[in-house]
Length: 113
Image (cartoon, rainbow, N blue to C red; front, side, top):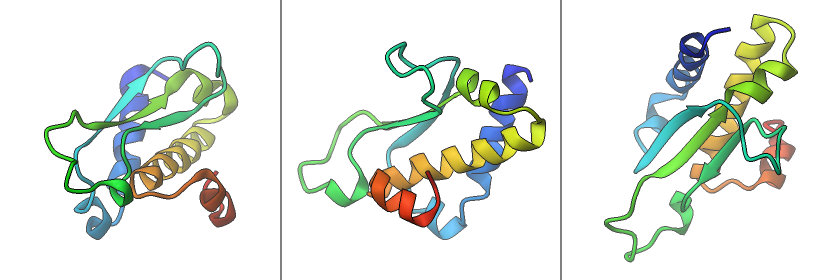
């Protein structure tokens, strides 16, 4: 799968977020990167920032939060394009949920880990 095709999968997954929730996303940018830090070579996605639930009056003038979806580990984990589509969707939803304040334990209980 090419980088453009993978980026399209990420874009399609973002488009599947219900409009009511997408409208609430604030000051967050989504990126595709080839590989995560070597210390976590199997990481599929990462959220870096301050979740909406933790923002207060102090939150102004800051750089956007970042959601990163890693192409290499995702494609290595998936044997078919259908598996890649499903895994990207799960990873995007997982990382967007972190933006909304869900932690890994809560996401695991909901089946999004």
